[in-house]
Amino acid sequence: MENVNFVKNIDNLGRIVIPMDIRRKLQINTGDVLSITCNDKDITLAKYSNLDNSYKIIEMIKSFVEVFNFKVILLNKECVIYSNLVSMGIKIGNNTKLLVKNGANMKYQSNELVFGENKVKGIYNMLPIVTNEGIEGSIIVFGEIKDRAYEMCTFLNKIIMLELNIS
Image (spheres, rainbow, N blue to C red):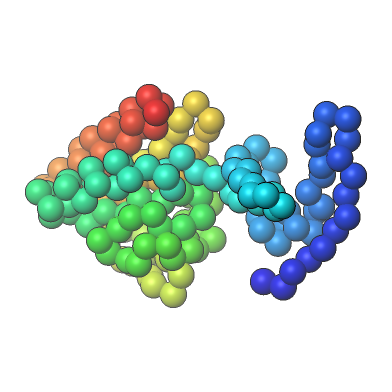
C-alpha cells in the first residue's frame, strides 16, 4: 500500500478525523474498534478484534481439533485467525465477509466458502462470535449430522464468547 499523507488539526477534545479515502482503502467503518499504540514520536491506529489477541482461545481450539478431529476455521471480520483447513492470516472472501458481518447462523450448509485464493467445499456449521462490543467474528466447524458438528460448533462458540466477555 502506498503511503497517503494528510495534515489534520486536533480539536479541543483531542479528536482527529480519519479521511474518507483512508477509511475506504482500509475498510474502516462506523462502529469498528481501533487500537492505538505509540512510541516516542509516532502514533499508530490499527483495526482491532478481541479475537486477534486471545492465545487462550486459539490453544483451546487446537486442543479441540486434536481430540475430536474436526475441521475448524476461526474468523475475525477480515481474516482467518486459526484453522486446520486453510492458512492462518488469509483474507476472507467478500461473501464470507458478509456472512460474518451479518452474524450468520448456519446449520449443515454445503455452500462454497472463499478464503483468499482457496475455495472450501463441504458441509459446515457457522455461528457468530458476539461480545458486548458486537459481532467479533465467526466459528466454522465442518462435519455431517452424524458427527454432531453443529453441536460441536455451538460448544466452541459458547466457550469463545464466555472467554471474550470475561476478559
